[in-house]
Amino acid sequence: MQKNIFITGIVAAATGAAAALFVVRSEASRGNAPGHAQGGQHADTPSLFTSQSAPSAGAIDLTYAAEKSVNAVVHVKTSYMREQNVPESIFEFFYGFRRYQEPAPVVQGAGSGVIISTDGYIVTNNHVIERANEIHVTLNDRRTFTAKLVGTDPSTDIAVLKIEGSDLPYITIGNSDALRLGEWVLAVGNPLNLTSTVTAGIVSAKARNINILSDDFKIESFIQTDAAVNQGNSGGALVNARGELVGINTAIASPTGSFAGYSFAVPSSIVNKVSTDIIEFGVVQRAVLGVSLQELTPELAAEYGIQHVNGVLIYGVLEGGAAAQADLQKGDVVTKINDVEVSTVAQLQEQISKFRPNDQVSLTIVRSNKTKYVNIILRNKAGTTSLVKADSDNALHVLGASLKEVDANTKRALRIRGGVQVAELKQGMLMSQGVKKGYIITSINRTPVNSVHDISKILSTVQNEAVLIEGIYPNGTVAYYAIGMSR
Image 1 (tube, rainbow, N blue to C red):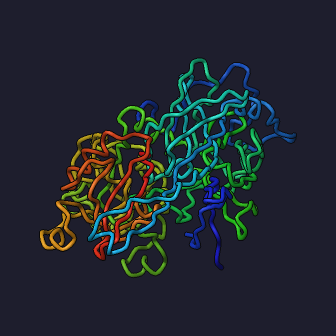
Image 2: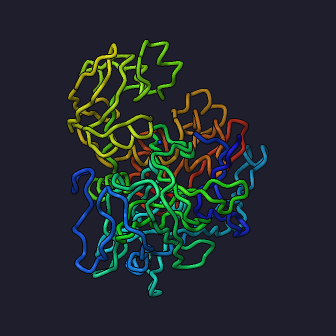
Image 3: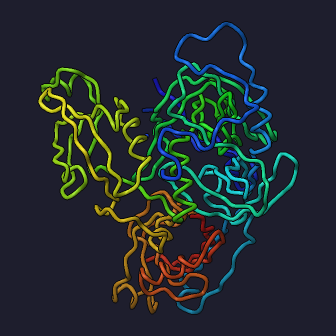
């Protein structure tokens, strides 16, 4: 049965109308030790169910959580300029450029965010601010701030903003690992521009992979709830009955684009790690096992001679990666990460996402139907144990393109002195602005471009602002694009 998944942030069209991002597929820290909430329980926090035994009869009071969290959830409003390109004719190409552009319309969007520190760090969704030239946030008390983009992580759809302030209301980050099915939670946000809205529901499922992210290293392990979430809730808070942040509301499953009973949030275990890395390093320190994974089905179990269908199958090991160094093999089944049981790829990815390169984790695996325990030193995507820096490579990443320098014959045919050509396109700033494969970038912000390094150098100096890209297509059509840089 086909299921429709919508990202819940308002993505405004040129007319200003909001539209959800539509997908038609359904299927994945430091600072605080994994599995522990930040800070202690407040003295005035009401006593709740803390044991594994059945709770006594009676209604759960959610008023404390609502009142505690609503002041720390902000309304995020964004705007960017969408370029209207009027291509020049081939005659203008040969006899002189006529640089004419229609006025660029301002495109506006809105979503939510969560203040996580008293000095103004805010967590939201990457898709809420991904093309923004300007970002403003409004607090529940109606104060408005201009926000600076600290960094983004498309792999988890998380972004971090910063506003200048002190003694700001904030939400303590809780332990999403401790959430239990059926536990009450609140969704706090600004759906449909209805500010400071609180809805309630229960945890319906954990570690859901709904296949809405397109990044090569995506991590989807959503908390599924039935708390009502709509367009504009994206980036808002999912809180437990103690008023602790346990997730960032991100998407809904709906045949219409409006709430139909299913909503999804990035768990706080991922949010905490990603936001801490972005604040500390400007980029996420992502650790990888260096394996290809597959859900273990009865058919695969029979093929590999596995007696118990419980765990995640390793069906490929990257040469020189962390797994290879620890002698993991194709056909091994991972059942636990640091004593936390994993039975799906999403669960495994969520556990590994808590760590940085050079961290050691303990894996429980089954090989030839015998249990083994393996200690493994995690590595980064480049295959080393080093931490990475927020450099020009990250600036290039947001463009979403493979680039190559223009050969001499093309330069001669188009009468250009230099340029860098778009060889391949994927989701990113260029694709979102209508750039096509083959486009040759000749200058950025009026600075000539002759190499990929030139682009890296220019973009590495740009933060949360628009750049003007000038270039030409192989057929001689000149085109200009204004790209909002958000990283």
